[in-house]
Amino acid sequence: MKKRIYSSIGIVLALVILFVLKIYVSDYFFDAFFGILASIACYEMSKLLAKTGLYNYQGLAMFFPSFLLAGNLIGVYYSSATNNIFWILYTVLIDVALMIVAFLGALIFGLLRKKQSVLHEMTVRNVNNMSVTKFALKKALHTLICFVYPAFVFLLFVFVNHFNDIPLGKLVDIKTNVSVFVLATAFLIPIFTDTFAMLTGSVIGGKKLCPKISPGKTISGSIGGILWSVLFGACVYLIFGCVESFKPFMEIFPIWAYLLIVLFGSVVSQCGDLFESIIKRRAGVSDSGKFLPGHGGLLDRIDSHIFVAPYILLAFWIFAI
Image (cartoon, rainbow, N blue to C red; front, side):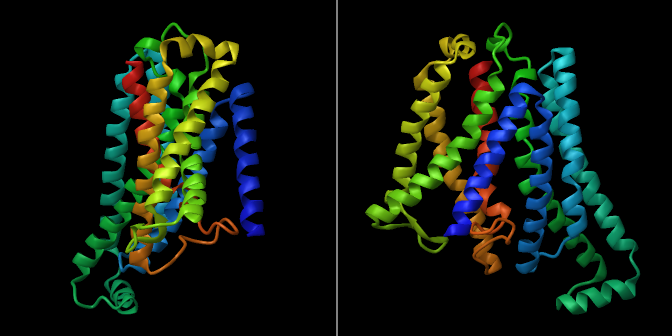
């Protein structure tokens, strides 16, 4: 328990420092942070897949997020420089193209490897019931999974971090650093949901939410996580509303709209948690790794955030347009 508490304090302090740097220095500190997290998460995901029999190229899985990060930053730059929102859509297409190219590269590498080396690996993996070509194809496809989840989905946080640089209708004339508010929301929804779902579930108990996937989660905890998230979401909105520079934004963004975003975001957050639980269940492990003492792996901490990133981006984007 002490390790978990110390790790939690460390995580909170790291986020506070990053937000201070974002506000007073540069947005790019968070971008570097996201890139590092994506690489570690891909490493853990690669290991989980391997434990389920979905063997992949671990090194490529770890290194590939750097390409997506660079591509997303280029997209943000051109979107701001040309005042063209479609550059973000172009960037997503470029990301998809990068994933396809990396997949084809992994496939070609697998096909060009020495046959004796591949056969030795197949023997070690105990997968002698397929051809060398099929093994190479499957290994490339399994690596592609890591490109999509968590790398591609999680790195949508880059667009959330640069929300101010995206030319959106209602925000054009507002000088407020809206991205601070949007990014804080993306981080706080999973934190509120996870914390209060655990507390509510431990106090009230009751029927299990998904006993075959995650035996510790209860329906009461799930509902409690959503309700408390909405309550604390209202507090976050009012706190930002008291800051003079954010008042112009709050005038065009009503609290009811924000609380709806938080409510559905809490549901999305829990879906992300359950999704990773399914992967861990298939891998036969309780944690994705040992990166964070007391918490398990990094993927265990950001599984909810991975699902929340595209949701928050889309929700605020729709409102701003």
